[in-house]
Image (cartoon, rainbow, N blue to C red; front, side, top):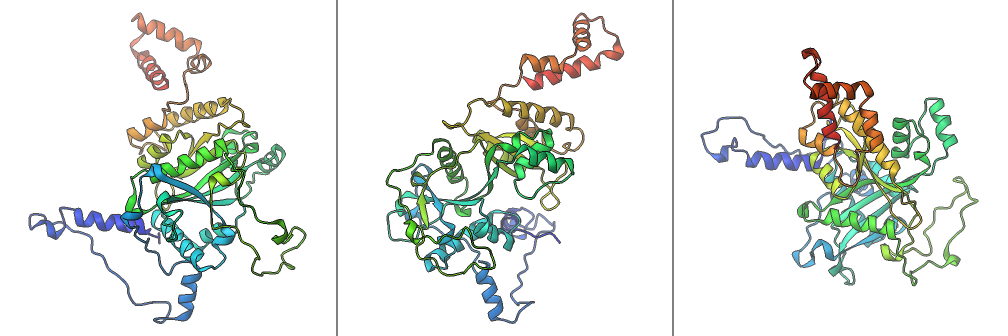
Length: 419
């Protein structure tokens, strides 16, 4: 069967209690309502089984309730700071690091539909994955345990040679990983996009008690500003090279798993860390009006929408991109405008087919973006052929036949949608 997330169960519980059909609303409503059942007896292990306790601790499942943050430790979003999380220290089995990892895992579990042990393994071992957390500035320099307001997990993608892309497409294959480069290159039949370097937002989770307070937006704004400006403090703390063991020439059979001599700090301010050179920031998510509004507010542009909904969530997968405007990257973003124009063309042609169930507000939001001019002269020529222009002139003169009147109206509506 399909798994239900804690977030979905919470929404169902609140919806049932607030529903006027609930018995607490009075005898006027005689409709059915949801009943919550809890299983307290274990079905796979005996009560207090040590193997189950060990497995729950190993997979960070022994405490999935997000800890409540005291109001004295809260602050406005503008007063928060973004920190890079050192994964070597996070998974060092230190007492404080274990508590911090447990809080991060609880945030991710409470905010997403699907979670598995593979997600924890990706956080720990995937070399392309990085973690960031948003913390209140009031608790940074204090001895108290830092309270997480928002977590962001990213993955670096791209930098693939055109030869590799051509060889894989020629054999009808697609390598694992690099979700956005492979998808866009295959969708637009262009191998140049895969050579661009980008970062994909894998997961972003805000504390469930403090949603809609700007913490998620602030975390993304700081992350985007970090990748674009790349400010690095001169006196950044560095680990001494003498304490780092060289493992470049050691294979997996000869590697010795021993505690490291020196570990970097668990939290590193992004102002004190070198930045990777990127061309774009991307995200892939299940399309909902709320998420679409969130990413468009951050100037992300949709360029791909899967035609079949996800089997688990029933949502269409949407890929959005924002170009990086750094000093070392080209300022010409015409490639993004071309991708968006092609996306709109295909999306409009499929509105009566695969996307017919989308709400009008979502469809219109996908077709408009303030930062990209759409109606170029070359595009008008592409939309209207010569014979179509002549039919429009005849239609305006009211000399067209009755059976041909509908086509000019459709063309006029289409051109209004492009403006």
